[in-house]
Amino acid sequence: MRFTDRRQAGAQLAEAIAALAPRDPVVYALPRGGVPVGYEVAQVLGCPLDVVLVRKLGVPGHPELAMGALAEGGVTVWNEDLIEMIGIGDAEIAAVVERETVTLARQAEAFRPAGLERIEPVGRTALIVDDGLATGATALAALDALREEGAAEVWVCVPVGPRDTSEAMRKVADQVVVVYTPPRFGAVGAWYQDFSQVEDHEVQDLLREARLRFRPSPEEDS
Image 1 (cartoon, rainbow, N blue to C red):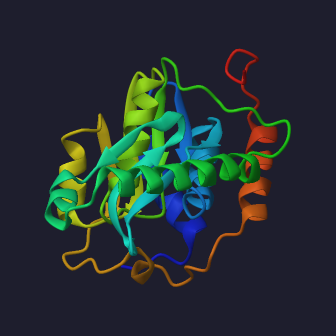
Image 2: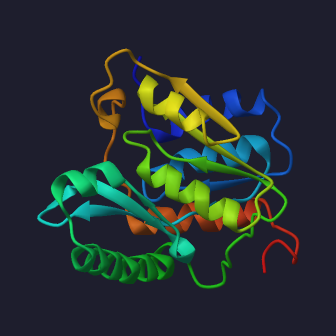
């Protein structure tokens, strides 16, 4: 099974989520790739769309290897076993966190166009949406951040992901929705015919369009 692109994957994911009837949902997409997926989910559910900003915390010298993740509000998730195995020091960790905190601030400016305030999750079902799960580190950081902000429930929702990561996520999320769990996963992009990069302006355009289609009440949009 391969999805045509993120929008088509989002439409299939939306059907699976809608069948579970989440109460008072808000879609929080992980940029950039999760936003086209999340847009389709928000349209089907008739609910708001926002982004939840998370940065992978890469091992010094090997940035592609995640020792943890950082979400908005300073929430961090760590791979303690990896940190201990490699012997990463506190100063090195602090330097990575400081650098990625700056990047998060820049992303907030880039991904939230002027006039689009963040939608608060308090008392609602927060749907974390991405184009796929890999290690799950960023989704875990987003989950912790949204819980700390007062979400009533936090769901993790993706078109595709490995079985082991999906099962591990079920232990911490209120609900996990995965359309397809291939027996041999590989990489997220392998399950899309078109997995081209999503640009910043595409994220902005989809967020603006979603906000025009579904305008939150003043309390939600403050």
